[in-house]
Amino acid sequence: MDNHLDAIVIGAGISGAAIGFELSKRGYQTLNIDKLPAAGNGSTSNTCAIIRTHYSTLEGTAIAYDSYFYWKNWANYIGTRDELGLSEFREVGAIIIAYKDHDQNKYAKLHNQLGIPYEVWDPIKLLTRMPHFVDDSFYPPMRPEDPSFNDPPKGKINPSILYYPNNGYINDPILSVHNIQRAAESKGAIFLFNAEVSEIKTKDDRVTGVVLKDGRQFDAPVVVNAAGPHSSIINRMAGIENKMKIKTRALRHEVHFVPSPEEFSYEKEGLVVGDLDISGYHRPETGNKILVGSEDPKCDIKEWINDPDDFNKDVTIEQYHAQVYRLAKRIPSLPIPSNPRGIVDLYDVTDDWIPIYDKSDLKGFYLAIGTSGNQYKNGPVIGQLLSEIIDACEKGNDHDKEPVQVKLRNIDFTIDTGFFSRNREVIQDSSFSVLG
Ligand SMILES: Cc1cc2nc3c(=O)[nH]c(=O)nc-3n(C[C@H](O)[C@H](O)[C@H](O)COP(=O)(O)OP(=O)(O)OC[C@H]3O[C@@H](n4cnc5c(N)ncnc54)[C@H](O)[C@@H]3O)c2cc1C
Image 1 (cartoon, rainbow, N blue to C red):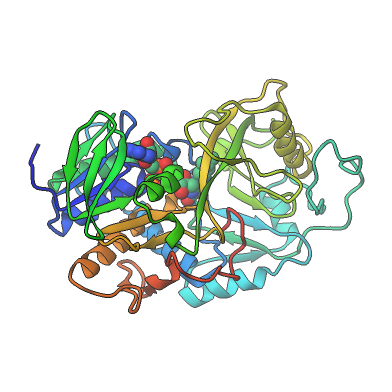
Image 2 (tube, rainbow, N blue to C red):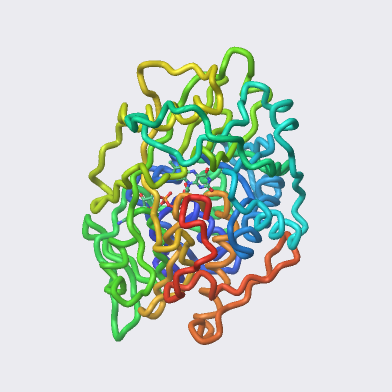
């Protein structure tokens, strides 16, 4: 391996791989180090990979819309051959159903501001497109063990249903990261797997490299923390965790699979559905199944994880019932197998569920963390934001005083990256949920 490195990226998930790609396009000699055997094998491997623009802030909406164009023109972004083929964007469209008093206008306004296509559907249109749904309201969401769980519905859903034609999901997220790895390698990037970083090397308030668990050492003037749910562990190694206002911590999350109802084929006609009224989301899954996720309603106890290498990776019958029984309220004919099927993984959550894309108090040490269960879609933009922040800071810019302004590539919008600062005040416009 080349001894000279300009940047080490800890992690080869969607964030780390995209940062490696963008830095190598700028001429940096990069090394991505991941403790797992291949790219995208961390929390990215279990993402639901939903590509949507429904975010609560202008910046969040803008980077999601800019990212859409990368997924849409994936071959163009990757720009090289991958022997495994390319991941595919299934642009099936998405709807957001809200409970009665929810402010759907806020989201419509953000979409108007950025020129993002959307439609407002009424319940008649919803039931025409999704005839297996009911338009009753079941808000607030409850646990199935709650005595009121089976009470009759109280009124109807919010009559404004937002439909986003350009939303969808990626069929194979691991492959998408492999694609980015190959793209980065075509620009000279190096990837090292089965290699665990156990120490961050520093000298005179500056990062100088990393030490691996097996004793190997690598030196570079730039090190990026893109370690996903392990971000706080890496920050502790670098001695910076207590120097940031916004913190990250790992949250366990379950997603389940159930078959499509007999009368409606999700494979052929399914949309991505965000259903705030039952605090869940679902989308089509291979094999005419439905993938069922949750928006973490207050009634579900959050399972914060101290050690991201030690948590229950099996779905639990209790959470399976909570998520699929809530969905069965919207879809009364939903088949519910008695054996739960699904996946479990961790979100890396910040105090306001908005990520941190920033420098740190240790010179040369950068952060692409706190993706809060909703940043897979933004991988390509994360690469651009970090590469521009790193390049500007390494050239002497004081990013804390004058945050780097990044002109997005696909839409006419400039991001003030100070929005993603580690030292921001908690952003009150956030949904404080996986919706971002
Ligand atoms: C169940 C679930 C559903 C989701 N659904 C969506 C969705 O629909 N849409 C969306 O946009 N987002 C979604 N997300 C969020 C999205 O998946 C994440 O934001 C994104 O994948 C995070 O990528 P990452 O590269 O930052 O982290 P990871 O993919 O976790 O990558 C971090 C890497 O760092 C490595 N690492 C950690 N510590 C070390 C170390 N000490 N040494 C070496 N390597 C190390 C890990 O092995 C890992 O590979 C979901 C997340 C989950 C868990």
